[in-house]
Image 1 (cartoon, helix red, strand yellow):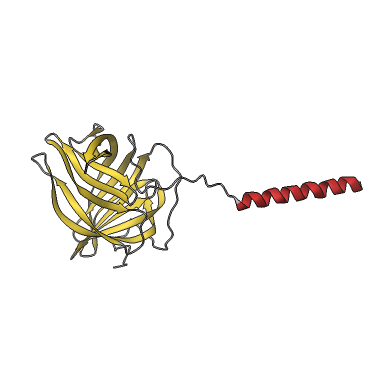
Image 2 (cartoon, one colour):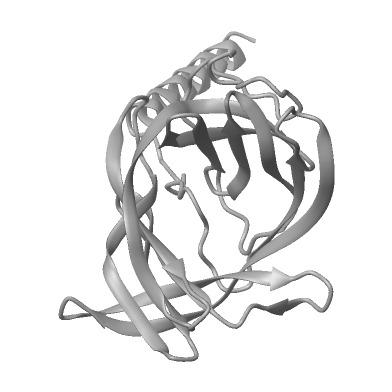
Length: 249
C-alpha cells in the first residue's frame, strides 16, 4: 500500500509540473478579426424601413449585399486585389450593373472607387469602417458616387467618428456586438454598424433627432466560418427606437 501511495505522489508531481509548463507557454490559435469579411460568395440580406418626418412608419423593403468577385488592379504602382461590393436585385438574385471596389487593410474596410460599363475608376483610399478603432476616434472619409452616365466621381468628404466599440445591435439573426460609426452635420446624422467577422449589420439615419430610415441584417452567408472577437464598451443600440439610441435624444 505504501508503494502505491508513493507512486501516486510521484505521478501527481509530474502532472503538476507538466501543467505549469503549459501555462507558461500558452498556444494561441485565435484568428484576428476583420470588420467586414470580404470573401467571394459572402452575402448579407437586410430589411429596409422608411419613416416619415414625424417618425410614423411609411414602408418596408429589402436589400441584399454580395461580394461577387474581385479584380487585380495596379494601384499606385502595386498590383492589388480589390473585391467587388455589389448590391443584388432581390427579385431575380442578380447583381447591379456596377460594382464598388473594396479592400480590407490593416486599418479596416476601405473603398477605392468602382467599375462600370465605361471602365474602372480608382481614387484615393477612403476608410469606411476603421478597425481596430477607439471610441471618439475620427478621420476624413471621401465620398465616391455612381452617376447615371455610368461614371464614378468623388463628390465630397465628411468626417467619420467612432461613437461606440461594443454596442449591442438587435438584428434578425440575434443581438450582435458592433462597432458604430457616425457622420453627418446639422440636423441629418447617419450611423453605420459593423460586427467584427460578421460585417455590415445596420444603418440608421436621423433627421431632427427622428429616425427616418434604418437597414438591419436578417440573413447572411459567410464563408468560411471565422473566429469572432470584440472590443468592450457599455453602449447599447435598440433598433426599434425612434430616439437616437446613442445620445438618448
